[in-house]
Image (cartoon, rainbow, N blue to C red; front, side, top):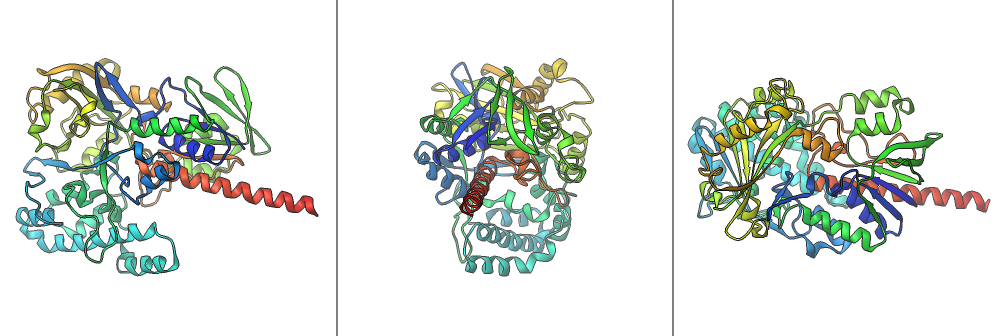
Length: 516
């Protein structure tokens, strides 16, 4: 088959690599001059930063991300480094203890802070263990595993439709304790009132806060690992790209697909930005759902039911505002030697999220994040130096200012807040890069940047991989119910499996017809 892939993020590159491995003719079209999308690496003055990916799950041995790399024979090129993150709140800080204090040390710490919710914490962590068992069993094959999955999920099945807020109210009375577990929803810019409750334990895995927490213990199923990628996410990008080109696939940068031409509801060809028309059998598109269906295809080729179900209600994250610095000292000494720390300045997470959704940029007052990639990957900075990123969630189109006119002022305000915890950032800075939502829109070719793609929602589903257009498939962050690196890769892998299976079925039907 002749296949065109739109976008060279991890979803596009994963699908391309898996398809060239099967011997298909594949061309990846990337509108930017550099591949990788928001998983590329930024470089300046000897420093390197990620566009935003940090502590990621499922790259441990036997886990989904690692299995894909192994299938392609490039696993040895991508090293995952187990580590931890810190969380700061106005009244307390959640810090990894020097001596390991057990699997549930955070639970015991919270009992000391919130004794009135001690029973609720026990209740929550029972749900936590059950959900992680369910997640592990869900990815296992075989009738016995499916039976175990059903029996494990049965005691909490009535909570399936609960929102995150309902789960928090069920477990805890103290709003500050609730904020500990739902604060991460600020990353998703998703209200706890609509975010599925049973996903909360998954995105609050205890191994995120202490890499010494075992992934296998008691009679429980294996827990997913959380890791940093050595030398940044660009390592995965480059490994996939090298594999694609070694197998004869093409990666064309500075080339945009402006139109997907159809014939009788089937893909016929793609029209490139240089006006060249290329006939193809299959198009696999990553990126924005609205950009794909409304701009490249045209709504006239879609049913109103499809548009009303999957496109119009599309529920996605907002964007981010980043300040990258290269400094000549070690800023991690101020955050317990952690490469990553979330600083939350409010307990009213829901209100902060709603303000961002309305277009109000909080200018850092609600919280920020500090990430030091060179802490785990020294080659990302010159000797004796460190790369550091300070960033926060931000609306695409702020109602209280303009990214073009206010970005420098807003960058200074963000650094003012960061320096309350990490002194000397500006004094020791040797280089700086400011990235606004406008930069992310240009990088991703989106009219509205969504940092994490679609967001889990109690009622709104993500768009399907298999589209109503014959020969057109949709992958990437906006096609997944759960954003992230491995979700995009696994979604691409599943799409390739469906595509190849469909192709095999058509071949058999054609052969059968000819035989008659």
